[in-house]
Image (cartoon, rainbow, N blue to C red):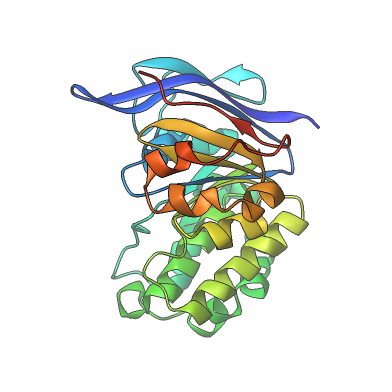
Length: 260
C-alpha cells in the first residue's frame, strides 16, 4: 500500500514538559489508524502537530512524500489534511449549511453544481444535517454539532481526515450514528487518523492501533489483535505500570517500552 503520511521521531514539549517523545508511525492510503490512551497521553498534541497548529521541537512530518516543514495549517488543508477538533470550533451564529460551505472555501470557484453535489453527499452521509440545514449551530445538540464539524471537514475533500475524540460527551445513540458514518467513509476509501478514549469504538473501525501513554507509544499492532488483548483496558485507564507488568504479548503485536 502507498504511504500517505510519514511521522518520524516527533518530539513536542510545553516548556520543560515533554508531551510527545520521539513518536514515529505511518499511514497508508485507504487505511484508518487509531491512537488510544488516557487523558494527557499526548493524543491531541499529536494531531495538532500534524496539522501544523503546534511546532515540534524535533522530528518531521511528510505527506505524499513531501516534508511539510513549517507549513501553516491552511497550507496543509490545501494539500489535503483536515482536522476535526475535539471542541468542534463552530460559529454559533451561522447555520449548518453555512458551516458546510465554509469547509469548501478552497474549492469555492468550482461552481454551483459541484457545490450542490458536495452538499448532497454530506447530507446523505449525515441525514440529520439535511433536517437542520438552516438551523443555527448554537442551537444544535452536541451530537449534531459534531456532525456539522465532520461534514465541514469532508467538504474540503480531504485525502487525510483526522478526528479528535468524536464521541466525547455524546449519548450512545448519537455516538453510534457518528461511528456508522466513519465506517462508511472508511469503506469508501477514506484515509484517517482517529484519536479516541473509547478503545472499543476506536478499534472497531481502525486497521491499526497505537497505545499512547505519557507521550510514548507503549504498544502497536493490528486493531483486531489489540481489541482482543486485555492489557488495552489497563492502558485506556492510564494504569501504565499494570500494562507493562502483564504477560508478554502475542507475536502479532509490537511493544515498546517507555524511555527513561
